[in-house]
Image (cartoon, rainbow, N blue to C red):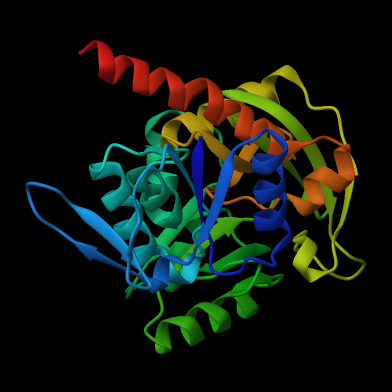
Length: 300
């Protein structure tokens, strides 16, 4: 098969591993920078061009779209979808997961456990917003933040009021969430492929830090998840419509709570913690499902 990997950086660990996994299985792998693509949108023969070349003959696309290029990256992916190329994650599912408010509303609609969350733009009553999520301590998040950036733990009522007012003064959209103290600065990343949790790891925040992101000095270790956690992670990925997802959850007194569903989860931490060939499993998924899609088209 000819498999495209939508990525801005060929040297990133995840991109390199996916490229290697394709080649190890005898497939042709092409790394494509979505920002360098330009499209011919028409009703007869839509096409995508890259450095003067028409991108044709692809059987599948693996989107590794950074959060900063979600809009254009999804537009390029949609164009591949219009050309009947199998996408590991579809553009609409990526758009859902990248919109933090929309994703939480979808999880809420499906009855998936998550922290109590308030959303505001210009609230007339900041105190009521704080009360809504159970008071301080609480977590305040910028809607556009990634990798723990724009996430603040307000430990007192006064601190919460000050941070919320500061963010709103900058005309930022924010979420206010209850703080799950019993999680102890740790969360669980469940890696879902094709409706199954194929690997999971515990991420522990560094000392003096409450954010468990590996980019912020957190550590990763192998963990055995419960049946309820497995079911919750699968339900969260399904609610977004994602075939490949990194689902982050917290262990709380009332069961697993979803923090985020990532449509382009990194492979380095989970492969190191579990010793599993996650990249290879993604290519295996493509082999089974892209071929199935082609057969269905031929039989129509």
